[in-house]
Image 1 (tube, rainbow, N blue to C red):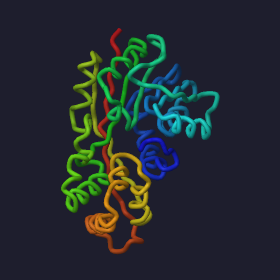
Image 2 (image 1 turned 90 degrees about the horizontal axis):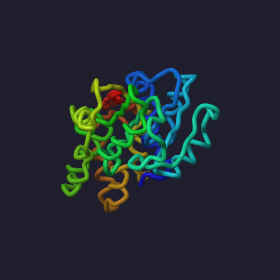
Image 3 (image 1 turned 180 degrees about the horizontal axis):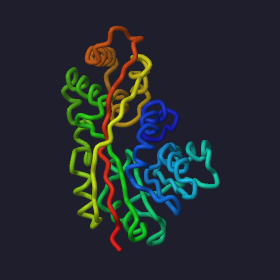
Image 4 (image 1 turned 180 degrees about the vertical axis):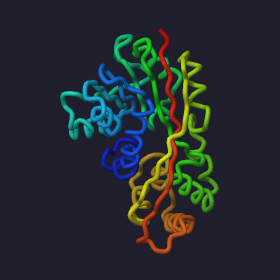
Length: 261
């Protein structure tokens, strides 16, 4: 579900590239030193850091070897950015290796987030920032909200799969986790953005690629229900035509905290 890098780029990669520079600004990353990108995916955040922090060295890790290979093959900053397969719950780095750590749209997919956060704290130098961002699946991320509302309307069994049930996606949840991990000066805030899809197909077709919980649901959906779901979504978008652009707002909840000295 999460291994096809090309499919991910069509489905969520465009969003990752919009979120990345905003998260870099919010995270207060240092101008130099070593920065870890956790759940690097196809590399959008690592590249955004390198572009804005020319004296920093970035290491991106992801549990998917396919994503790591994809990011490595498209790395425009080979002297500044490196990627490796890694598990945030068990990092192969010494204590206080990094000056800062940041994670975009990934930490909520880690099975044991508390364990992972303690590991991230361990490998961050005292005084370093630890930051993350997660979609507001409940209301703010309209691309997914419209999809799941439509899915539940035509298929009540889709309810338990709705991404609004995911952890860390509501206001206050990230900052609570950060404080529980003993981080200081914790600050949480929303980051808002919009995305323009060229047409209804530009919005709909990426759901057919099997990426993320929504894509996995579409793959399992009975074939006769797929056109019904498509029509329900189109109705909810209130489109004058399938060729009309689709402009949707989105929100991530972002958090940063400081590793105590």
